[in-house]
Every structure is written in structure tokens, then in C-alpha cells.
Amino acid sequence: MSMRDYVQKTRHLVSCIVTNPIDVASQVHVFIFGMREGMTRYCLTRAEPSTLEAAFALALREDDTVASSYARALTPDARASAPEPMEIDAIEADSMSRSTSTARVRSSRSGVSRASSSPGKR
Image (cartoon, rainbow, N blue to C red; front, side, top):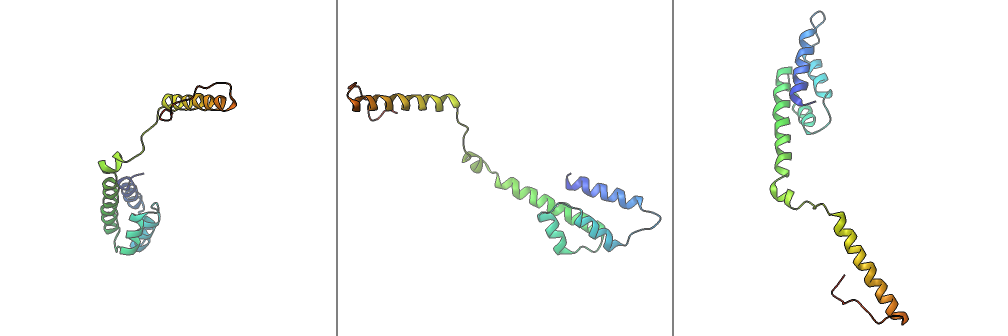
């Protein structure tokens, strides 16, 4: 659930409590500790907002800050240095060429055949 959805859900639940209202400090506490653990929750615990609306505003602001910092971490340079997927056919072809050159070297050592692979070929 996104932070916006969580704030909207909390607003709705608070508006439904009419008969026995909960004090503001308890509302703020329940809102903060109902969040997922992370930087937004950590910042809210440190800030100690006095009202629920202040907690909502701070939570949305911190959530946007955290989200934008993750977006900056995935710059095009970071994506360019990511590993590239390998093709299975290329791996199989490489392993086949290695196994045939190894077999030729073994047979030449035993004296059966004088054919050897060139050193630059794999």
C-alpha cells in the first residue's frame, strides 16, 4: 500500500470514530507504528509530530524524498553497468569448442593423433 493510500485510509478510520474519540497523541502513535519499517517511519518517530495532520504531511513529504532518492540511485550510468543477460547458445557453442580442443590435445599426447588445436582458439 502506498503512503497516500495509507494516509487516506487512516483519515477515513479517524473520521469513523465518533462516539469515543481517541486522543491526538494516540492517533499519531497508531499512525506511525502502523507503517512499514523504513526511513519514513524512522523520520516520523524522530520528528514527533503533535497532530495527525502534521504527521500526514511529514509522512508524505518523507515518502516522496525516499522515493526520489531511490530513483536517483538508478541513473542511466548505474543501469549501463548492470550485468547483461547471456545467451545459452553462445555458452553451449563455447563449451563445445573447448571440449573438442581438449580431446585433440589428449589424443596427441597419447600418440594416436598429431592434430592439435591452435593456441588462440577456444
